[in-house]
Image (tube, rainbow, N blue to C red; front, top):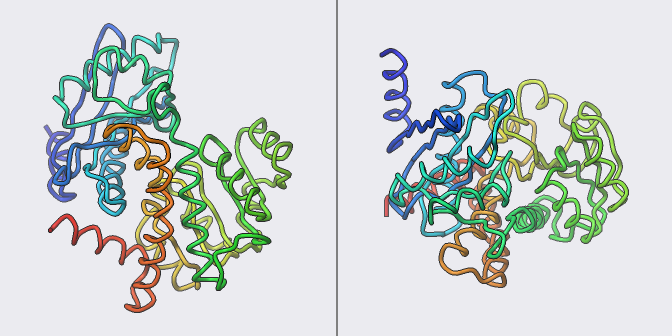
Length: 347
């Protein structure tokens, strides 16, 4: 009972609509689907599959936090969807991955279309192929839009160009020093975008193979995470898991702006305040990394790659508007972006 009371408190205080706890004893599925706000359309958001959740409460909190982020991301990007997100608590021992995701597909189908899933951290288009055997409410499929990472990265690069316009007087990234934390799917594609634009790039990742690929393919410089955070650079791009801006890292940063692909980059809202006090411009993560969502939303509507990239390119205009209004109002960019979203949800 105390745990149920805690969940209801989280839902009510955060403005959430529902949290679904989904399980299957045969496959070992343990999944949570968080639903935040579906006023603008059915919830659309990825499924995160990890074996590292310390507890059910931690997994629920992650799903809810991410679902809220999807509400804001969709509203600001202008796509007709609401905020939903799923996490799967993978078994720590051996398990049949195909059966887990087939079972998850049945669970998604049981929600009747209120939630549409796609890949996220720890999942892939292959996993979504297993999901689709039992539900039509899935996107990011191989023969349609596929992996959304390249589009997400393109959108972040466009956000960086808008950031550079405001901070350095020109949207040209050539010669700018960019530090990238995390060169997984999105981070690697972002490094490619930055390389094509002539930026000078430093990277760090816990996976040595990914770092070596970035060095070999794009001529970046590899450093460890501590050195990356301490480097004097122009833009810092967190592209790993959330909470990259925290009590430990924030005091080390020596950059002019933060603009990356990770969700929930600020561990708490006060870290946004602290960045502003230090004169570091923070670009709201859900505004910068909306390209993947735009891509799968286009797939749900009827996939057209050119339309997906054209809409993603408009992230430049979104960031430009947010930063302009922030300068005019004296508010922080994340406050301005939140207000823009709340106005759209209220309308």
